[in-house]
Length: 174
Image (cartoon, rainbow, N blue to C red):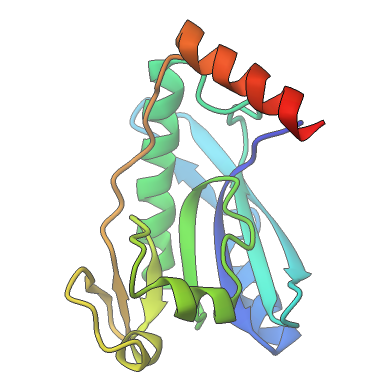
């Protein structure tokens, strides 16, 4: 199974809003500190609440998760570059960068979860932020948007205990 690293953004109920957002990122080159470039590829899709999403995936990123510290560093650098470009993007409702963040929360779920759950890197429109009582964990991101600052990606080596727990969970799920 592939573990996609992406920027995933919910654009609301209008397909053309997601298409405009995708067009802004499609083919964009992100220049890394090494001088190399990662090219953005986009996909749009609809969630179970009938809202449109755009997934932005930079090229040449691990599809198996964070298997080494240098992978975490690369993903963090790409995450920062995606957030920088997001500051000038067409309108959207909310989004986040990370591994497997596609449709990480539908709009309904987001409104239910935000009072009790923190999502580092979550960017949202100010009108949503006000609708959930303006939590103080959010900071200004760009005009019309707030965020919980991005903390980057982390390499966590698996321990024998982690592997055993995963195997035990698989036994009971089957």
